[in-house]
Image (cartoon, rainbow, N blue to C red; front, side, top):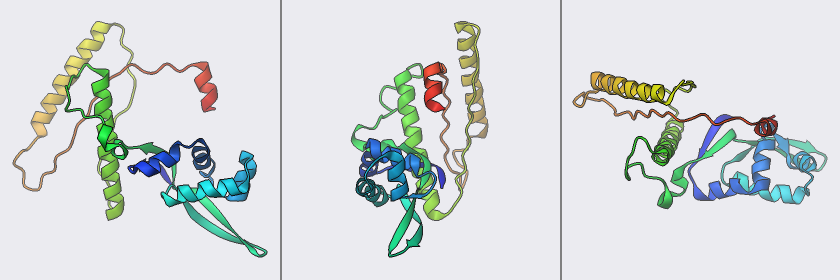
Length: 202
């Protein structure tokens, strides 16, 4: 099972938005039969089977095992990933475009950049999986507490200058066989965790 799977197909994305199917994907992180999942969810087995077929059609669940019980063969199904992210590639006509009015201080432009990141990395993951190759990536994630807005502005200026200096140092526009890499750096306020959200996560 993958930790994260990228959904690039509009029909597959639509399938995950159904509340019952989303719940099924969560339940099938641990493979189970339609009968056992139906009992846990309090739904008729026929209804669960219908939704499982739709999820299987889009490659979101897969057959893990088959068990013979008398005259009946019980299919054990499992989700193909622990979690899923829908790529903007699923809605290409309305996908955000960072090239439109780029503004480093705009939260919505940052969102467009993040959407492109999801789309590009999703495409790269799909290609790497098909070629059975590893994908070379790197990411940093952390939190910084600034005492003042002036400190934050100074940090941003120093970070931008340092990133530009490193890019200039290592960039080679004429290297034979060189491959372009995209660098994305983002800074935004952390989302406040409330007691209610903690209860939902637990």
